[in-house]
Length: 248
Image 1 (tube, rainbow, N blue to C red):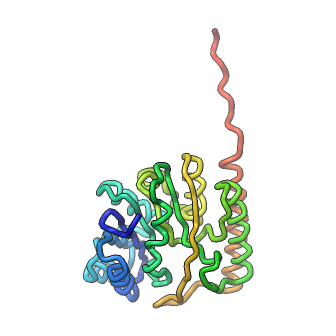
Image 2 (image 1 turned 30 degrees about the vertical axis):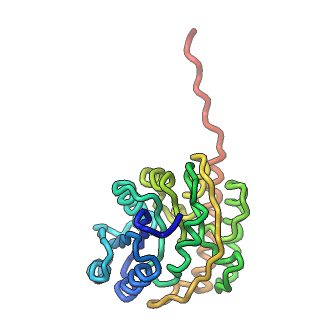
Image 3 (image 1 turned 120 degrees about the horizontal axis):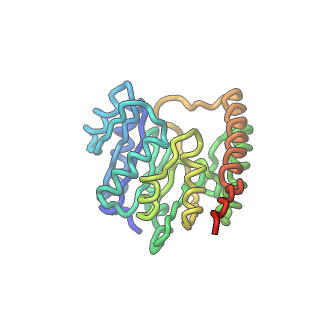
């Protein structure tokens, strides 16, 4: 699949007025024919106005729903407008739109729901991550690799492509909880008979703002990941109660 008019790039954005115009411009330059939708996720700055002036379609959420909630809006928009693929691109400038073609290529001829992850730790560059956060990512990757039955290294990456079947699935079911938008969405795709793949990409430094990395935040992230894994294992592996048979 090529980055053409059948592809929608969805950019979830919360208070990214300083960077979103440059991201939209980069997408337009790298893939002139794709649709570009910025989901302004309850921003208190001029994100929506800046994105619209840059040439993107804009939907504004009244409240901040998080990346998962913003992406569900994007999937519903894509399903309604009959796009064949959706690529998620962050609004902070870390994702390189020149990788769009590489993300879309594995979606070719996939009738089942398909998700392709742009992986930061698969040979495409050196992306600095604190030790605790890297450990958490490895735990998640190991868990999802077993679920998806394919080696995965970066299941929390927000740079990913989805085919039409995945768009229709996620327009109804995309999770909005913390980490669920990246992790549980893959479980949902696999349980729906879908496939997950990854391609190596290089991440860039943020064009604006500051990363939220710190020792305290990394430790908190690790604790949340451990809790999320316990919830995911229980949710997707717990036996369902049997239904007693009625009188014959």
